[in-house]
Amino acid sequence: MSLPPRSEKSPRRWDLVTPQAAFSIRDTAEPFVFGDAMWLSNGYYYGGVLSRDLWRSTDGAEWTMVSDATPYDGYSEMVVHDGRVWAVKGSVWTSADGVTWNQVLDKTPFGVRGYGEVVVLNGCMWQLGSGNDVWCSRDGEKWECICADAPFGPRYGSAVAVHDGALWLMGGATQEKGDPPEKHYPDFVTHNDVWRSVDGADWECVTAHAPWSERQWVVAEVYAGRLWIIGGFSNRESCNLGDVWYSENGTTWHEYVPKPGFSPRHEATPYVFDGSLWVVAGNSWPLMNDVWRLTLG
Image (cartoon, rainbow, N blue to C red; front, side, top):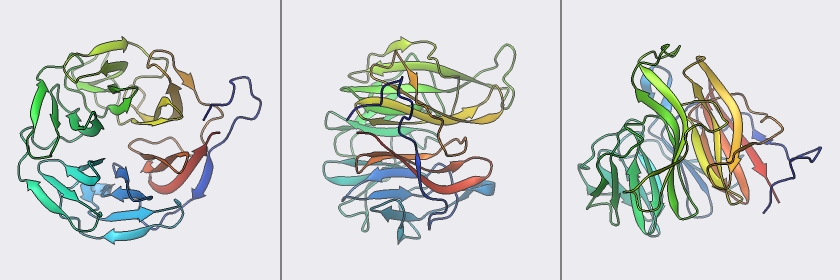
């Protein structure tokens, strides 16, 4: 699967699959791909209202509710590991089918992380973000702190992915005052750096300032052999972002053109499924429940 040449006059565009999916408008919904379907878990609604539902779709157009009251913690990070689905937050739950859930740990050692991320690498689940510590587990029950003080500091709203045999953390915000203070949340500073680790313990800053602007609440996926970041929120300018960038090595980045058809947004829900990169829902001020798809190759 290859990207269109940068000189190509008509690169592949994003296709709108549905302007309004069956699930309600939301951001911060958690994605996972399991059993030949995209699954969407929970989400934020206005006023801090949590949608505790779970949905699945095989085509992005038709979505079926699996549960209207998921038993795991709200906003749990969802991953597929060892042939099962896992929901990780303040506790850990697992399921063999996405329908019946069992709790394997009632209290995680790292606690509830507002914007933590869980990914899978080398047979382990890794928890990072919303702190400067990094944890891993093979069974969801026993967690080990691999790094207590990562050099990127306590990050919030970063993009996290697994690519080329390594963990990646990109952008996000730290709680400190900038000079001058950033516009929307003056007690936070946003970043556009990129960090990489093959073992979760030793981290390398592969670029301190990527060509994409500083942002938080940005999401990432790995598609067509490249890291992709999608949208986010500019704390400096107090606005949503709608740009999409990709990189093979985390150092050299290219903006994908043409501009996406979807509106600028933060905390969208991304997937790689059925040979495509998907962007679902998110917060565009207003919240959205649309579904978009980019297919290369």
